[in-house]
Length: 206
Image 1 (cartoon, rainbow, N blue to C red):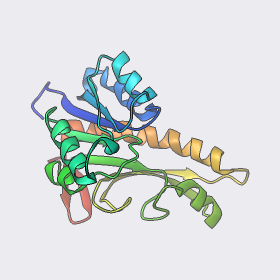
Image 2: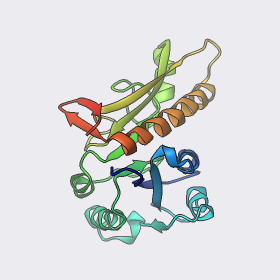
Image 3: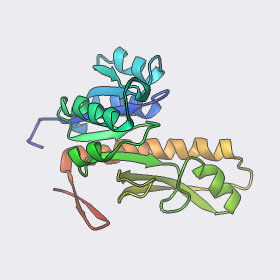
């Protein structure tokens, strides 16, 4: 990015928006190098949208059920996000899989987190699967979104020890803390430095 011009972030949410809030808070510091320019959702009436509105950030909702097909929804979502000219698109608890149109338009710019150390324990029950398997460490992964489920190239990972007394809830809560810190730190680096992707290797600096 040019000096003193913050990178443009579009954040997509489906729920409470705690990761969104962490990004909004980080962006208040000019040295962070980024600004949330829009927040989108796949449903109305959620706290994530309310957080954006309180921060004065434009919002939009694109519900899958309002469209004749998933492809039509993806195309419209793509056009809506593109209108904000994002440098990075963050899926922050966004509970829909974006499609080929979206990923093609924003190649290597769409990031998401997963509450496990990829490629282990993909899918919706990462903390529970890690606990059941008996691993001694798990954590969180920040990755570039691709067409698979939690299969994109890895930008960063944070390690969380599994304690003997952990249940799924306690483990997941500690993972969420690490996940949020990792997301904020590395989205900031992407904003300030950019990334380059070669095969499955990600390096900061464009």
